Length: 287
Image 1: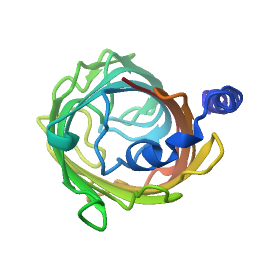
Image 2: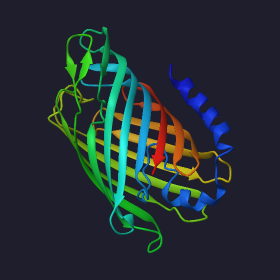
Image 3: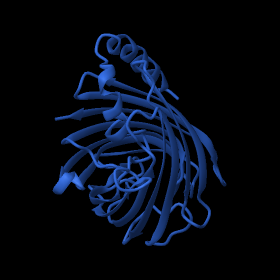
Image 4: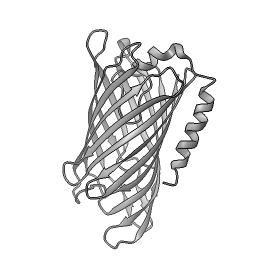
């Protein structure tokens, strides 16, 4: 993948920078509220206003009218905790750029796809509520609901527009065993999505309505070193032809008290499509 080298270069720079910035006294706090892996959500809410900027370089994505879609998407996310003990949080996710190459299924020709939006990720507003925390229960857990609409359409080089309509309803659940002074955090997330009034997006047929279920599990090691390793397993399905399973080794680097960089490389297999890969770099700012 042509952008994969960016991940390794960034990780190397983080390694050098973090050596002068890590604060071991924050270990317990990171285990409870921070060190969030790339795909699996922490069950505990953010404790500060948080901004995430994410770059995903993907390969072999299938859409309704095109497949073998290789490209990238850039996404911004704002998280605001509120309520008593910050038991609520609201998230606004906005994919603001996608660019790549694909194969037009009808003719087999190569086409360009690009625009100021995402592919399966729409502009979303998500509300999350903590259900339990380890001070009163054996696990942390939370639930969320969300609604979104496609930000704008994606242009193609064959004078057609993709994603020029569509909305999404989301429902999800998170759970983890994070405790203070516990080195290993295990966690899982279930993200259900219902797409409706969509266009050119259904990965299995030409219907305007379809479902996606994303299930992920993660292990995050809150080590004494300034680089924290993590590992995730991902499963995604639309309950028809789309079934994807991936493994994701990751590195998480907290720098100072307000900044974090993480990177992951997801690789695996998609039913009917073959191998899939996604390299992700995310920068996190907390205020």
